[in-house]
Amino acid sequence: MFIMKKITVEIDGMMCGMCESHVNDCVRENFNVRKVTSSHLKGETVIITENDIDEAKLREAVNKTGYKVVSIKEEPYEKKGLFSGLLKK
Image 1 (cartoon, helix red, strand yellow):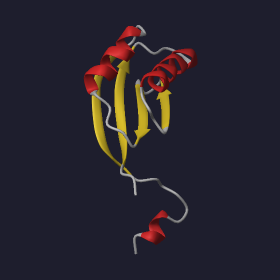
Image 2: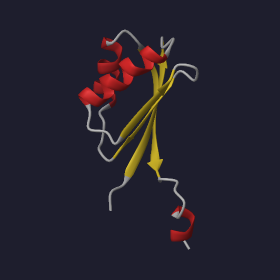
Image 3: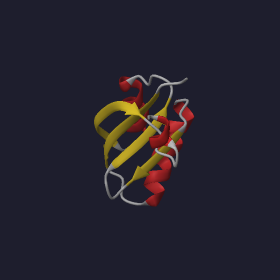
């Protein structure tokens, strides 16, 4: 079984949906991730991955796109599905 991670990246400078796409594409091109979603309204990008992501490389990749990484937070991720609560019992 794979241990999934949720990495929340606070990003300054995203103003619209196209900005979100630029950041998502940057993450997908530079790292092997399961899922990446960005919100310019929240000012964050959420990455779901099984792999370790080097924080310095993540900062560098995103900063090269013209946006600024403010903070990075990593935590365990459990997929929330219909049966996930039943499996824990």
